Image (tube, rainbow, N blue to C red):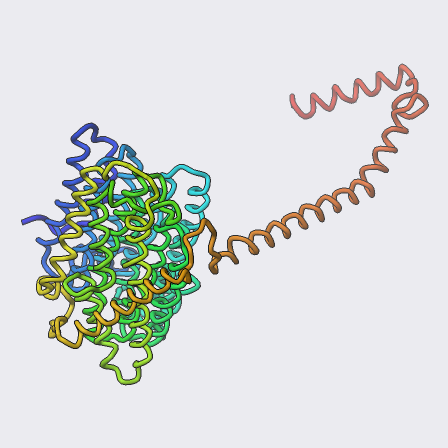
Length: 565
């Protein structure tokens, strides 16, 4: 029996020790950490342990139930896959940051109180920013600063809401909160920032594509899904989430279609997929929450697989711009195959993982008679995600016009990580029962019915037809080197410009005030001193010998009085 410790601490402490382990032993260490954490998690009994009393309040540092278990499990599986994917990296900072980041996310999922959640919540922000800075460019530094400010702001909102709750209720327990609870709105906004709600989403598209090859893969797995877990725990059944999630599924489609950077396309697609989960949380029924947990589980795998494939392309070619790629299936056939499997999974093709999870959410929404319009939005979003992630990503990277780029296949460790993720995507899609058995509530759902399968196939075929027609007619937006403006433009451009204008105005006003003060006080005093020091002035004129002796005696007496007596 292993001790009842938070498995996240295994990654946290082990990650901090990475610099002490050198040579081949380091790679064994990096693989052993998530494997050991997985063993610890599986061995943990369900319930609350690790209770600590602080200033009269009880902190639950370890709480295992069906909801926290399924999220912690997929986090640790992802950590293991990403450790394999990053084995070729010779950068200690990335290895440390990745392990600490994953450990903080797991520990946060298993936190039973808001203060413990806050500590790990902020630690995920601090650790993850180093995956952006590890790229070591000026742009990455600036993006990392923006990312850190936004993530820390989320933590401060969480702390403020927790303080309001403990003052009103006397407890820090992290259970269902709701918007009407004391501090409920602040905590909701904290979770919403990390979940990339509309208008709060731009940190995701700004930061993820600027991280390192492996850093983007790690980032894609933890932050936003931790927020999904927190919303499912604290705000299940909140109706506003249905509206928010529906908007999240739809608006990123238009940006993804016109975006040239394929990792940024995947970042917008990530926002789209989060919307399905947010809708499921808003509906709040057992089927909807099961669908949310299942979709988060599958999404981490297939989104990581897609980011892995684009990371391999970036590593070998130096670019992920659709306008510069094409024909890479000749040089990177295995990467192309794994990318196609990820694309089929995110598009919810039958027999792939996305189908058995996304259909649960859509079915749960369809059972609510007044939410027919949400079903329409989700179907539109499903067609859209097939359009930009299912077709655009593999097509422009591997199968469009031959760019003439010839390169080596991805490193072996990358291929192994992608292969395992692809096998899981297919395995879950073919046989979803093991995943369903892990979900928070008993599952009475059959994804493979004629209605589900034919509806989804029709949707996918019409989307593929639309893409083909748009490409053949030249209407489809071309892949161009460009910058697409999003709502982050307001806080990246006008607001800094306004702040600089205020600063310049203040500096100018202060200089003017200093000049006026100098004119009113310093100049008259300077003129008076100049007059006194002239030859015929008081200081510049000849003094009598008696007066000089009197001054000398006076100064000696003053010195004795002050420093001797």
